[in-house]
Length: 524
Image 1 (cartoon, one colour):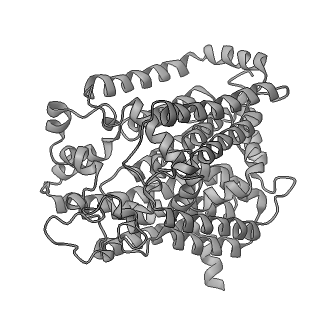
Image 2 (cartoon, one colour):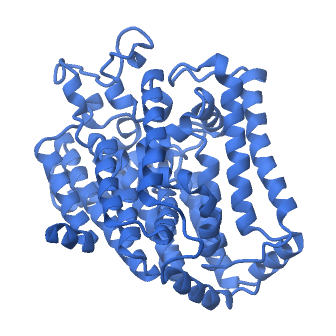
Image 3 (cartoon, helix red, strand yellow):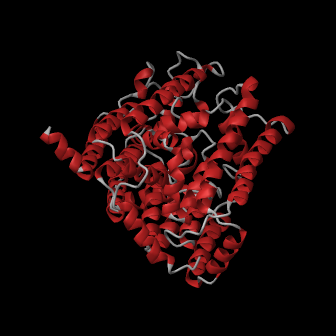
């Protein structure tokens, strides 16, 4: 009991040791995707060349304007290995990324520790933050099975931006924002909000019901109109994902539209003022010349990266393809996006669903900028490919940590959450064990090489991998994960209890104090 309490009181030390030991285990006993020699899909198609010969790949041959927004980890890999005079072979590069991802996870631990200290979070909230950031399928399975990737780096820069914004470190935020341009496409929009709006900035919400309804209905019905246009008018089909449940499409579209209306209305009510207040806020922002210089620099660098250095006309994911992916990622099975997010990221998604009524108040407490990032998270979350959201996850994690700060759960709730997270993470599942032909010439597991559609069969080994990637999950595994989600909603509600009427921590006072301090910079 004494040992367990000592562990509970030292979450940073525990998670540092856990991540390092877990990474060492997977280095000694690897479970790496065999497709394209361990470089996977986009890694082999776009980024392997960057890691092996950066100048040739980026400057001479060129990278498309979309993929170039994710090249930073591979550029760093190339020059680090060259600086260490190590051979740029497949084995060395993959080993480097195993180590690199472990160090990135340690950096995530460091920045969450800094942020939680800055906000005065209690032990339960700190633990929930670590669980949300690290104990999930994303971190303990996917990043290890596909180590040659950018996902964990995107998580880190998202967390760094959030911390520097809330701590008021504008120059550091700008530097992270500039680096983020070459890590994740949506980082530009997030950092623009974090730079433009002061931390903890708020405006009165009285009289905002009409404008909140307008925003929510525009979001929901706009998405429904997009679905109708893609599916029924243009008749565009996405054959690259799991077969669409055609008979259920109207229900799927309705669920996604209703989800957007409900979530956007709740957050708009917590953040927006009436039209006069919004105009006043716009005028106050306009005179912040230093902020606009930073924004101008960030946008200019983005245009240089994507329009000058990035090649045009051969985008890996252009606007049309992106919208089609969003549509079918949301609607090819009813509510699949909620199931996929809970399966992939675990605890923070479940907590947000269970205690949704409290989320708006916490978002308001963090300010308009963080609220804007959260709005973007909700809009993009209709896509069931959860891997598109790593840089936005820290905002959700912070919101759920502050939520837990109010709930004040006992240590046993955290212990059970850790166990649940480890089970959901599938870090214990060695995917390659499902393939009896692993290691043979031209092995393509987990890619189906036989009958089209066979990879979605109930008894297929391919689902050991694809069940973790929302749009490619089979109907059977989606149903299983949906049942698990329903079970978790009940369990988490039981473990964490009823929300208190008043905030139960020093965080509210600290946040209010910071709000008053920073509000003086922007008259609202």
